[in-house]
Every structure is written in structure tokens, then in C-alpha cells.
Image (cartoon, rainbow, N blue to C red; front, side):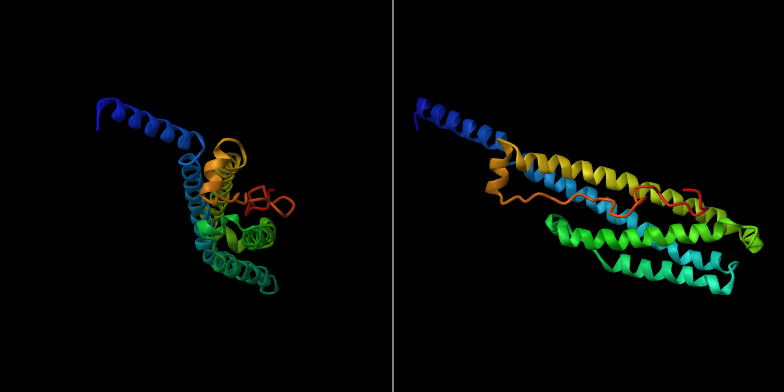
Length: 202
């Protein structure tokens, strides 16, 4: 191949590569993978919270027998929340996301109810002698805050990805790859955006 032909071929290949890059052929999948990575952080944060719930059994020993039903509700909500998992490929399915959100919100609400029950330590003086109570309270509150940060980061990554697949020219590369918009995580219950507090302070 002569030098002019080689140079022309190289120039055409370079222009084609730049055109594909400008059309989102590479940036759309990068944004998609970024959103999936943030979702993995969300799932890890929810799982860490679920791992703390069994420790509530120790705290519940200080509660009256008839009020232990609240703990049962928390444990049942945990079981449901941990039974629903979303993979990165499910993030474009609004129904699956809604199912996941509902289960996690139910657990959040149960934890708030349990926190209100235990807020009045005068009714349960035994709790004062449980050294793990304060530590567990702090861990749960801290975990709820980590969940909020993870969800914020996930929603930010989803917004970036969705913007790319819906705006010109990157939508061209997205369409070539069959990209679909992802579903952001939304608070669907009143106050769900506020981290539950085990000490009953909302």
C-alpha cells in the first residue's frame, strides 16, 4: 500500500473512531457499568443493615412480652428484604425495582417502629445494662446513613447514564448497543428518605 493510500485509510479510520466515540459508542457502556457498580454498593449497604437485625433479639430481651411482636415484624421484614435481589441487568425493569424498594422500605419502617418502642428506656430499664444496646443503635443509624449515600451515588450514576442514552449524539451509540434507561431508586413511603433512628428521634 502506498503512503498516500495508507495515510487516507488511517485518516478515515481515525475519523470513524472519533465519530463513534462522539456518538456514545464507548461512553454509554462506561456510564452503564458505573451505574451497575454503584448498585453493587447499594446492595452491600442493605445487606450490612440486614446483618445487624439479628442483634436486635438481644435488645428485645428488655421489652415486655406482648411488645416482642414488633421485633417479629422486623425479622420478617428482614427476611423479605433479603429474599429480593436485583442484578445489574434488572436495573432497567421498573417493576423489579419497585418490588425491591417496597421490601427495603418495609424493613426501614419496621426499624423505625422498633426504635420508637425502645425510645422510652424508663419503661425498659433493663436496656440500660445491655452494653451492646448503644453500640447497636449507633451501628444501625450509621448503616442507614451509608445506605442513603449509596442510593444518592447510584441515582447520580443512573442520571448520568440516562442522560447519555436520551440525548444526541450519544443516544446513537446507545441505540446501536440496545441501551435502555435505568430505573432510579425512589423513596416511595413518607419519610423514607430520612435515616431511621433506633432511639426514636426522627
